[in-house]
Length: 366
Ligand SMILES: Cc1ncc(COP(=O)(O)O)c(C=O)c1O
Image (cartoon, rainbow, N blue to C red; front, side, top):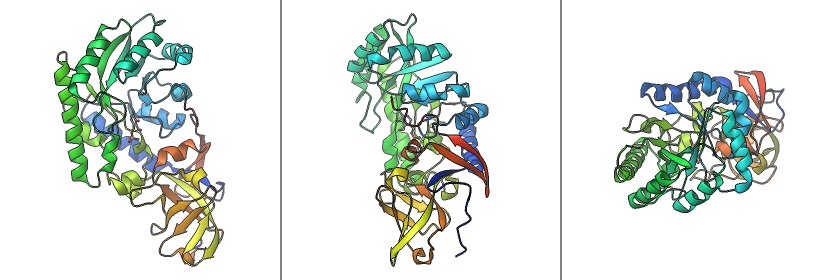
């Protein structure tokens, strides 16, 4: 095996390395799929949390963005974004000043209503707004998190929203995160069919005028864009990819993975095991269903199955050929928490370091 010591010598180890060309391909592919079906792209920025990535999404045609938290939206404003959907149950009265300020910076702010109880709280929170705020109503399509559980609940919640002087009902949204349990394209297709059927049943029960659908998940996005009633999709992790997309659900290939953890082999305590200088403080704690926390980009037979805070336990065929000081890149199981743990990424093209981008919304969880 050639020595890996010279891999990105200007990047500190451990650190995040972003392949700019792969990122560009991922952004273009999702935007092209949306454009081909006349569907709006409102990417969830919780994955990248970076203004330069969002700028590129907007340049390519993204209509708006999805955020979980106010802090994420605030951090993204320098991108020039004009439309934000806050896809979370806003229920904290102390945030009203920030919410009003954010609304003033935008052309369009969409809020989420996630249950009858939440609708009551949101209504009181919006008391000081002069105009009704457009809201999307959450439908649970299988994840079992926020949203109405059956069409009857949707009818009740839609009627409650429509009675409110503070809100206008603009559509139905869902995060179909349960689709991550699909393990091949047929299963992904079946999830997409079932999710669309559920949204359609809720919309039919609510009745006219028909409400547009806003699904949001990287596993299903390409299969939702062509379905009737879908106005927008809100995928997040497609920008960088991870093992959940390339190995678990197989909706992407290993070569689509754009963001990796650069780490150094720091010891080889026994045969069959090498230690790297990246542990849970880089990788987080998520695993694939087969127990992988990361796979090596340069030598894909090498995997991380276990971490402690500052060590990754590296095993697999060829591990005994590694030398202390070797540098390798690793694709994490789940990319979103990895980005949130980092303060910047090194942007590379081929072997060249071309930029460094801060993770602008790092830790903006409120
Ligand atoms: C409400 C909501 N929308 C969209 C997404 C994007 O999902 P993904 O990262 O699978 O693309 C998420 C992810 O957690 C979410 O919670």
